Image (cartoon, rainbow, N blue to C red; front, side, top):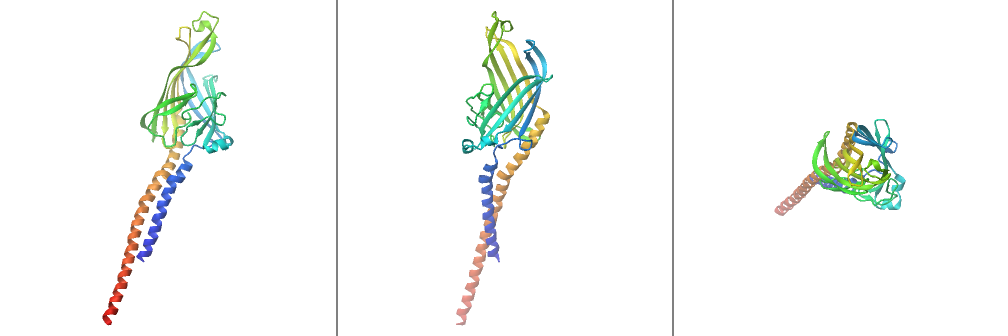
Length: 331
């Protein structure tokens, strides 16, 4: 009886150990990836919202600077599933996302807008120059991680974060682990010092030039703060303090195109936290909780099973020895 129970326990122990290993090393790597289509539950398109205030905002209609202008930012993201199924994309396990972002003032006038197409590794979020990747229709050399999400299982380290104004990666510097609406998040800061990103021809008197028209250098700076849920890499909150200016012949700022602080809306933060929390809980269950329980219980069952099998074998051997001793005495 003990031997039979022991054999069953050994079998269960082996099964649990194999199950834990399969979950951790096969199932989790298969599911811990960015989706090919981030808007599967919303018609194939996701929408994120931000709001803020521009301390200064240039009005091209009147050629004057406005002050304290409320702004809203809306980003739409769609996954190009057919593009992700091409041989090149599948071999590198890439997702392909198209995004459109617009910035509107309180009158509904679009003051800034941009588009981008990103191809990126579904696990590491590393950008790839594949599948028509571009910024505002221009093919650029993509580098760093996609600005839509951090890697799965984000670490407490710096990451090269791709800035679409510079078209290059800028270090997202890890700051601290914090709590946000009940979940643990990692805080990163991306700092861009004033950098020329192009030129814009304007009337000379606007920038202190005696010429009728002057090609003014356009400068951009930003301090971007991001709060990332580490298991999923989801950016659940962001805040940008961005400044864009035009410089005159003396290389000083003459026009402020925009000077604004814009951040994720409270409703969007709550929605992002809830989604990330549910996905993180599933990953923790598959990657840690179940494998750990399976390991502990599996080892326990193995030990008990081996002991019972050994005890059952010893008892049977003892019984045979007793029977042989009685026969010898009778002889």
